[in-house]
Amino acid sequence: MALVVLSTAPNKKEAKRLAKKLCKRRLAACVQTHKIQSYYHWQGAICAESEIALSIKTHKKHYKKIRKFLRSHHSYEVPQILAFTPCKIEKHYKKWLKKAIV
Image (cartoon, rainbow, N blue to C red):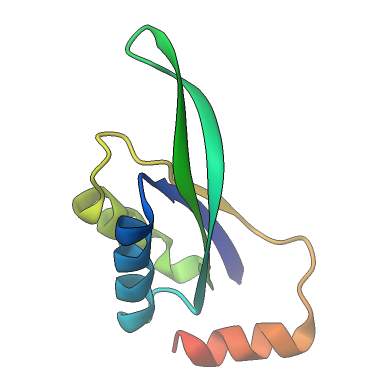
């Protein structure tokens, strides 16, 4: 079953490093990155930061490995790790996804 895992990184360099390692280890078929502005609560204050969002396309069976990977390779004390199952997925994309993450 396909899964999309969302995370963030503080900068392009870290996002690129995480994305490449996830793909190289075949934990992700694809990782898309884009610049975002985040507003959040942290240690009693409301913060605003530029970040890089990561959209990780994978299979449900890889979630625990991805979570462990992000926790150990991420610079944030509490990295964002959210996972969603797509309600629909195009059949050719689904086939490609399976092949990409064997």
